[in-house]
Length: 238
Image (cartoon, rainbow, N blue to C red; front, side):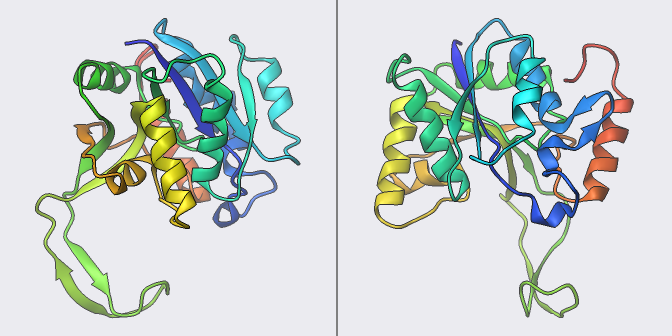
């Protein structure tokens, strides 16, 4: 399954509350984004990587210079969807309309080669594409007052059939670009690529992935990611 990778990395990570954006935080001997990139860099099926960065990003050039593979850049946008669309337009100059694109979070450092192979195996012949996700196991509560730390329970939500979306999310270049263009043209901003595909009337496939493919949002998440990576055998993870 030949594919290209898009990494939206223009976020400021305000909830991370550190001197650097979360994707550039130190994690072991490298950084969060380098762990996120590593499984793709090691995969012969990866035909190219585009990282979308903000115009005032002073951290990425040094990281790019020490990577083993050539990585292109694209201008970051106001929201994730804008960054992904910009990266797809960079790829459109040399990739085919039906080439596969894997969009992966820059702050998701615990993605493994095992899950990468599962995505390729499950989606290679799929007409639409899909995403890594994890079936929900916890009891879910809807807050009476959303957006605050201390509130009351409004109701318990049935978790049956609910999944937590992760990344990579995998779609054909043309299909994804048209879906994003249509959504943004209608002033609708999807929270992930799969939602844009859903709005276009198509149904992405859910591919069960590892629960430890976490996204670093806070300092606690960074410590958890370090613990996860420390337990892995050489070659198992990123």
